[in-house]
Figure 1 (cartoon, rainbow, N blue to C red):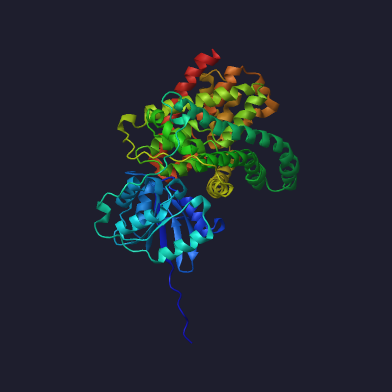
Figure 2 (cartoon, rainbow, N blue to C red):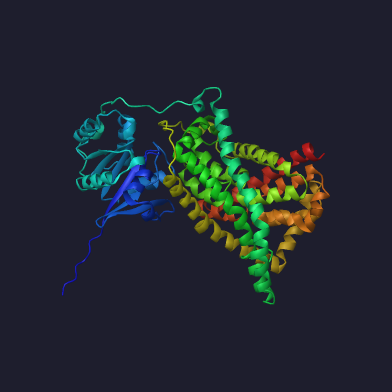
Length: 550
């Protein structure tokens, strides 16, 4: 009896510029539950992959930029060569300008191609004429769609046209397309020449401050409950176990104890900040803010788009370093440098709030965040590429502002949560085990003794050395400063407490962040980043000592 061999499904790759509606279209074609993250061949850059039919798989590549050399754009271009069918996704409102640029970037020569024009609700009512024109011009099937209101009929028609995909007519890409009148994106106060940047900065701070405040209130409420019903019972259960094993599981750096506590303080920030950023992305507000702040960001060696990974760092530095893959090759090092120094991760935020509260000075948190951001920006500007060397944006596109959908927000949020659970937490567990080894062997105490001269230099009590050392392992190591119910902290002045927390936060990036940077960018850059951060931390701490302590 002969067995029928099932043929390999055809691969369909969806490619387009950022904010072209690809992700929304992907959800409509595959369904939210079927889309999963997968790595590109030989790359750490991820894409979304789903099933169209038994004969076709669909891959949604990261949004690309014109003349961009980021890791995500380069890898997306390489993925096109392996595809059977290319689905070009272009905004119908800007097709005359964006389509030639996309054809040049993707170079789908010799591939079967389908063109999908999104934002169909924003163009004139002559949709059949628009489809016929681009189909006749390129010699390929064309379909216009409002991806936000994607219906079953749209899916059926798109699948039919995918089967009809053909190669682009020879020489067609060299001709200029006809311009069609279309609705332009609305102008807002964010584009105002005087107040636009200030408003964008305020909205950015609000996008960060609100979820952090809510996460802190939630974690502070949950902590005694978790201690009483989870941590204390777990410690009791392991009572009598071998000392070494207890140290690894429920000691000061135990996987179960510190892991549970850190998750309690970190996950709410990652979750709520993820929701905030997702709402800003789906509404189009994120693109407007990053465009508005492009000028100020260039002054420190970055561009507006690099602001998103920096903001993500306030949830988790590891996730932010991964997101920096979308940065240009000439700005990624600067972006990672700012993340490591100025993006106070959720662990650091929770620990700093707790320490300031124990000291009786909770109001210090706001100036603490401000100084971190200010010094972080100066640190990035001094140590990294000059802004004059950054290339100007090749093509500026203004996005439409619209009401975000619940399904779209949940899709983006799921990606952030998966990155935290599957990438950040495993690294954290490894560091917990390493810290437990250092503590059990006495090396942690030796490191603490080495840190005491630094504290004496800044007129800080030597008893606080453990806070410096533990924060180098994880930023929530600051919590050891709460020893004795905050007795040490209350014996210090407000300026001393501020300086101590700042120094512990910036002396070096935590081992988890440095390990991630090493994996992404190599030992050489990771060690260089740590050394430069150490210098900036000591110099800025000396200035703070002169201003705030003396």
